Length: 144
Image (cartoon, rainbow, N blue to C red):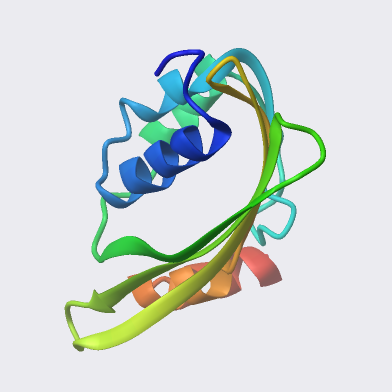
């Protein structure tokens, strides 16, 4: 990535990298000091404030038991050239059942000089838990 990359370019690199499982490459999309939050996460919203924390975050993700791709991408420009609002879905099929799934997402991102400095990631975590067969784990987290 370069400082000529638009915020939309960086966003697309991120969501495609997540979908393709390229977790070791993702931290490089973020500034050394950043502020990433997942306000709707039932697992808690611990801010990720550095590239090292993001490296641990992406490295701790469970191996993928489903495949998905970003779809229905709509990127909205704002009055601030560093800020975009991106609406999209992760869509895929559950291998065990061949059931299709859709996970709606909205990211509000500030991207400066080609690096993500701030992001609020609103993801349907329940839909992801269902697709991954992790509803029991989610219930345990919510009731524990």
